[in-house]
Length: 304
Image (cartoon, rainbow, N blue to C red):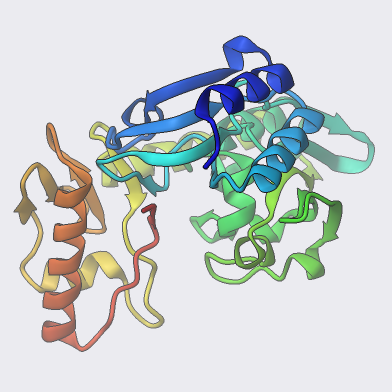
């Protein structure tokens, strides 16, 4: 068994004392505002630091999870053993390159990347301006909204393999699909992504972003803690419509509730636990299956 004090000291030698938190509540780092303590929460600043922490965990047999902005995650009430590597805040640089290209570190938020593109007069990432989360999460999940998705604009992704090797995957190699990717299936750590955008007037880009933001605010329960869309879209259906048709809008388990504003969202109305959310998800799945014959699959990543 690993000595926790020694491993803590080792992590701090790799990334600095202030970048390693012990027994840190994950509720403070997820948009659901749910989750018990991470044994170690580590916030690297550079690719070398990310690689060093990944190597340290692999060599010591310590469990490792990657967290961005925590916007698509349900963390367990009892917390998580091992290292939660938070690639946000400290690891969020965005760079405009020649030829309409942009490169963003994994921790850059979609909102920040969309804003940087707008300011540079580059169009194509407006669809993501309101998607909560980071570039790393968008790459892993092939995030999408309003007829756009990450794979539409991404040309390459820089990653670490589970063996700690740095690789750059082209778009075909990333094997994006609906809310999936090669990086997800192979457990890679996304370090950065390069996007190919197109020139346009900043004012026109800003107008499209404002329109999408207004539409999102009108339809989605952004004022309440959630993890975004709870379920993937079943082929030929809309999850929210199926849930609404099953009479579940407003249905609650504890403080977890099917949003009264948009049935595709589960929200935390106060002090919801992960157990509440899991119970609600299971009940929604069972009742939608009974009502429509459609099996709903969670889009939210259920950590355990």
